[in-house]
Image (cartoon, rainbow, N blue to C red; front, side):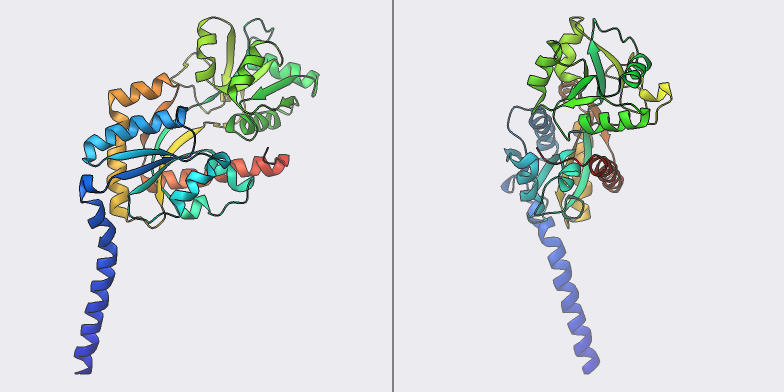
Length: 327
């Protein structure tokens, strides 16, 4: 009798465990009755919001389940990200995260750990950082620029879209690797930085393509190189820094689809598959391309998680080396 009672207890325990595992799957599979909230941790109207809405629209169609994009801005993206990190792991609350998730832990005191409390679904897009000069600049190539910086340590001013962005961190790595110095001018965003760059306030600009695309078309600016290990399909005529003997830096602001840690693997995989479909859709690719994003193929969840971990380590090292603080 004792053995029978123990066997019955084990069966009940297994049933409870299986039931607990299947609860989120059951809730998620009910379709439109349970819409998915997709949190964008930045204001509406920005590039992260635009990418999220484009991907969400297509995923809603293929999943047969509505994705509602909700903006939760604040604290460099940490407020919205925290909301997802602490949400139920049922696949009904997701996040479009950016590179800020990998740098914020080194700059702010957060109430969550991005690498432990969030898990990757798919990498959505990247946008490379280019090194820009005015079209009237005497520097025709990256070696020209680096030679001038070496001969005049700290005398040239440069900027990026904002402190501690990947454009800024990538610039610091490049200067370190090249053994040269320049003075960074801080801005709070690309709008004013771009205006001042065009106005000649500083002569070297580390920035993604989108803010400068119309000025490139007008012949006002010139990209010398891309901070990546290969040329970008967005500007295939612009050389990679590796072509000049420098190590790959790959400063590429990115967007990634994430879920709370503990979300069942079956849900993660299903969402990954539908994110892949969205990224292959011409309408989505066209939208992202117009924003100067390279459309990623999504990647597999485990691989994307490993890539995020490497990103966190790389940029954390730069922040620590240069003693950077939150502005």
